[in-house]
Image (cartoon, rainbow, N blue to C red; front, side, top):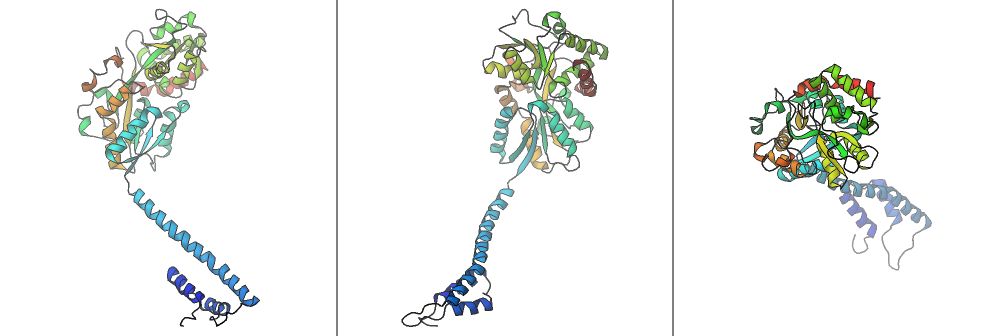
Length: 395
């Protein structure tokens, strides 16, 4: 076309190249009418030509914007496809989030596997995640269940929701802390305790065993977590296993007579003691350690059952049957059962008691004195009954 070639023809050629398709013939015809070849002295466009130009812009601009958006999305999708290749594992965890997160971060750094963690709340401790696992049984979303207790884990195993796991680290695992079929393993113990206010209760006066709480001097001064959630239900179920149902009824009735109050969780029970709303509560060791870290005036005695021992409650870890990421789940299981994790838990604000023999000398001050000799499976057998009876008597 020579030097007089109009700018519009260059523009249409570039647009055609960008879109990888020719500009429609009708549009080219309109364009030639709107942009006639330049002539010496210049040429003004008529009103009709200006309308055609507006029409062309209105028709083509949306296509250009669409092309730009698709180009951008293409770049983003490429980035996402790279992220999707990263290995990942889905963890359901009832351990306090502030305690679990540093351990999860260590695993991610060590393995490069991304952990997608779901935690529960204090008011639905453990039970909320257990119900979710049951609901998802036909199409599991979780790969690993890391629980702060053992009783509901046993029930999940019995319901066929947990898979067998055997690893080098489980060969010599303590028999009382492992499922016979390898579906769960226990580690990092806590214990049931009686917490009391150091401002209003002397160490000599403080209750030393479960039976002491039935003394009338504690009327209106007691609090504990609701048995429906967390470790309180398992604790009362252990009374069934240890004392029998009749004696458990008497104990619960005695607590009712002393006007024991129920709150949403163990940490809430300790907070009631610290703030003067109660003087004594039933709780776990980790909640007392957390209170002491905060500078609260709270001390504890281990909850001795008829001077026969203290209920020790392990963390448990298990792989979900039908887990979507089996290999990553096995790596996370091996990590959770390592002495490295027990070291981190013992050094955390939770101060769990390690079960690895190699760590006993380092964390002797967190050792649980005289653990109760009781089968966790028997406690799990009585869990539903304990919760039901507690609800009937204490509410």
